Image (cartoon, rainbow, N blue to C red; front, top):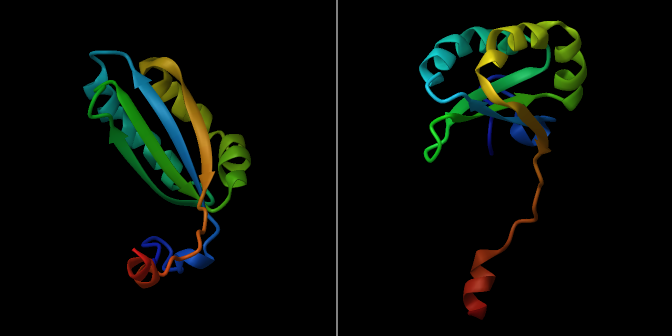
Length: 124
């Protein structure tokens, strides 16, 4: 059983939406972007409905980053966070670094039926 480290709630009972945003930074500005990113992340972490986040840099394209934010609901990001003025502050802080306007997508966990591996091994 998985437990969310931020809330102590079982993952199976936690309604969660994962937001993926691809960030394409102008070449040569990666270090400056990374130095200003913590200020923007602080605005996200203090938002209502926030669960957790991570930032990843592409192994193949050093100017490409992926911001992953987990929210309780999509409305926490799309309605509450955006209307709070926090997103506007992030845009003022970071959008000067972007070569391409960020693309954001939302995902939810798909619960799949468990497979009995022992019965599969016996068949094969």
